[in-house]
Image (tube, rainbow, N blue to C red):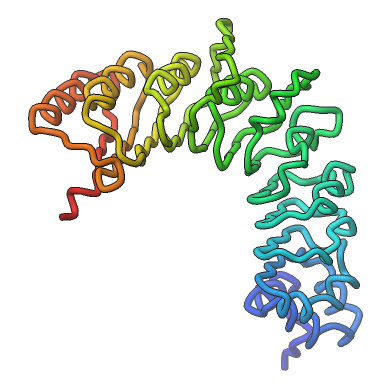
Amino acid sequence: MTFIEELPDELWLKIFSYFPWLDLFHYFSGLNQRIEAILHSKRLKIKLKSNLSYEKSKILIDALPEYVIGLYIDYYNQNIDISSFKNLLSLHLSHATDKQIEDIKSHYLEYLNQLDIVVCSTNNQLGDILFSEKQLNYLTTCWLPNLDFYFDDKKFYQPCFTLCSLRLNYCHINTFLNILYYLPNLISFESALVCLPSSNQSISFPLIKHLCLIHLKILLRTNVPLFDLESMLIHISCLEQLHLTIDRFNISQKDFKLVELTNIIQNQALNLKKFHIKINLLSTNLKMNHDDWKKTISLYSQKNIHPFERSIATQSDLY
């Protein structure tokens, strides 16, 4: 006869993986020393979507913060203290409080390798997490609202060599060039590209030839000239994947030419293997004739260095 206690630890961990973490500790904790040890060897990833889910979890969270390696907070709550989660590897804050951001900067969460701050107060200098002596030493993936105002301060910035993937809600061309300069090992970048404020002058980094960035995902916003896109591509000599969305209101035909966009991509992205261009004609009010498409597709087909995937989509195709 075999007793359930004789099951190997691997099977217990597999069984436990089917339980919600709150139920798991509620029903199995305190049974015996071995089960307790297996429970405490399990690392937790917690997702909080409302005050109700937080209140249900609060007692256990307060008792076992060192076992939590992933924390996803998908709502605004001033009372959630993240400073006790010393072993966090990933943190998502959909609405970060000033206190939570200060806790991150204070190195309470020194092992973080993934950080998402979707929305926060504009008073916070989020760039310090990446470009100062307060930078997180193990961070590889990051999502921040914006860094435009951070680089406007013209202070000393420290390069970050660990970050491989960065997503911003929006940025302008000067911020992007600063990012290339101070993130030499960046592999993937995603952002909406906005127009440079009239009070700002374009900066130039003629020596930048970023050798690691291979994936670029850009949304072109209102009045952003194609020249800004060209300025980005000039500095990314190894780009392999480009995802481009053009979604602007009331743009006229004379202000945007598909063939010009094609020429920029063809001339500046010489190592491109895959690209996807989406033009929302419903919001841009842009009309393209058959010759535009024919010439564009012809230009794309001339790139035969690599067998690469091609995709051009428009919202008008659906109607």
